[in-house]
Image (cartoon, rainbow, N blue to C red):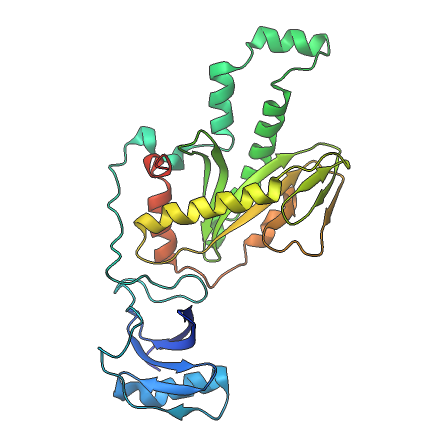
Length: 307
């Protein structure tokens, strides 16, 4: 069938299925509600109808052939076919920004898990002698949570690196312009995941729509912060990609004894350390070419410093 593919598209109150050529050119589309099919390229009509029947069933009606001026949906960039879900191409008028030069010192692909925390500790944390003294005297320190966070990021980072054979790319320790950072960014066929790591050794965790409780303590805005971080990632990538990039937030807990999710918690993916492998089989959001393009953008340190 000439490698035609079918992709969903929702915008401006419309819900359609598009039949595209491999280069992203739409040859036909169908309105889901009315099952009315519009043919844009007549030579593909029979094949397009066969594909659309597979998705919508019988009862399709063919409307008049569309002219280019009648179709409001933007064509996909020639190098990247349109993708299902969130990976819908932008309008051609929305040109992506040019990437800044990439020097080795600003290449985030060189970061190891926890590298941002390591830098903070080296810059402002206790000396080796001070740490040894505190350990011998069993004294707590304001830096204890930093060392716990570092260990958590390293452990989760190792789990994420295992997904590479499945087509995933991962970046660690992304500094943001507001002084914060993104623990991990996972980029692959299932989309982009902004991953926040929390190390609560030996604790029980309850997670709700926006807040979490550790050992029944006061609420912590873990879920809300993860959602905000994913929104930030989506905005940054949108400046430099010629297609919409699907970004989801994820919280990964390390060292906990139990994890309870509220029944209404569905906006943030919640995992324990070893469960992040569940992201590996996800597909259908980005092509291999789009994965590489997003990774090329995301590895630039300076793109994240703009607020």
